[in-house]
Image (cartoon, rainbow, N blue to C red; front, side):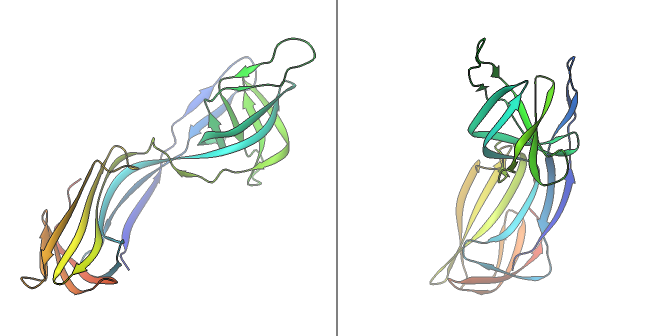
Length: 229
């Protein structure tokens, strides 16, 4: 199986929401991901797997959430809104800039929130508190944390080779580059090699020895070189 050497750094960026009310620290959650496929070891990649990968990017996370919460006596409902994973006073949280509108009270107009955060105030793993307009409020029925996925705000560089199988003696690899936007490749191409001519192939200075190849898996070693980021 293709192995990746990976280093992860937590990179919080401090922001403060301040007002005459409660002040909480908000740190957008991010991880710096760095790694490269190890060399000089026999590796296995199935069709569709990575043969080689090298990357350096800052990953951020987002998830969708439906939630009910109350601020200053006004009740709000967030319907399938996109939230950013955020550390709220050191606890796991979810913040959004999407506008939500309260229910209409007996007297006066409904109130709009242009930003709010939901967070885990007691380490329970559930979102049990809300924060908006410098007001912190408990959520009566705690909410399950969103399923976090990589956000489009993730930025950096990643390059990878993917095994595409063989046809007769032709081995195919797919090469993809990601620059700034790690979710969508900025460059994509297929490269081919004739294994009758050589089992030692080179791609952009990366030397690979093919041990065995068929339409199920590839056995190989990374002998030399790398892909420059």
